Image 1 (cartoon, rainbow, N blue to C red):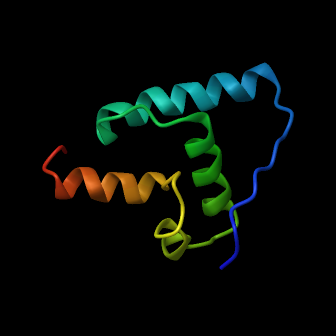
Image 2: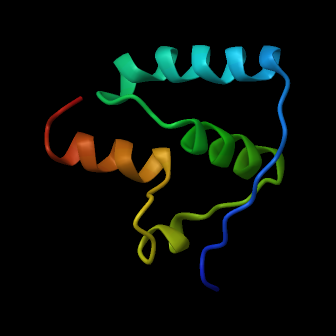
Length: 77
């Protein structure tokens, strides 16, 4: 497990519109509006078939799954 690193990518407007639509869709389920980074991270984790739960303990920007678990534990779902 290493230190978190930032990556950047160029995206076409259509892609960003879909990312923003997914943010809006998930906000009612999650109880918060996920960031674009949250959506992109979740998409990469899914595409690469990775479980990054172990990394969640050591980062300030938690995955959607971890934030969802916390909301459930606090009774916010």
